[in-house]
Image 1 (cartoon, rainbow, N blue to C red):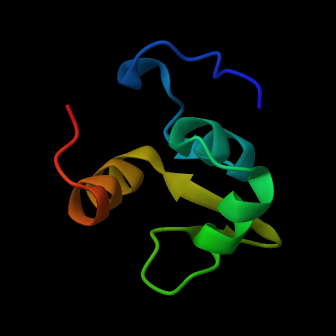
Image 2 (image 1 turned 180 degrees about the horizontal axis):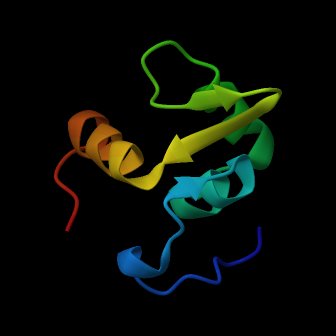
Length: 69
C-alpha cells in the first residue's frame, strides 16, 4: 500500500475519497469501499461517488477506535 502524501491532519482535503480513507486507516481500497457503504459510517454519496468529510471521519475514528492523538 502506498504512503499518504499528507503529513498532517490539516493538509488533508475537506472531503476524502476511498483511496485516501484506505491510506489513512491502513486498509485496502476494497475494505475502504466496504466501510464507506456501511450504515453509520459518515460517507456522503454525490452521484456515483462516495466521499467522507474529514471532520466526520476523525469523529468516527474516535468513537469506534478510541481516542485519536
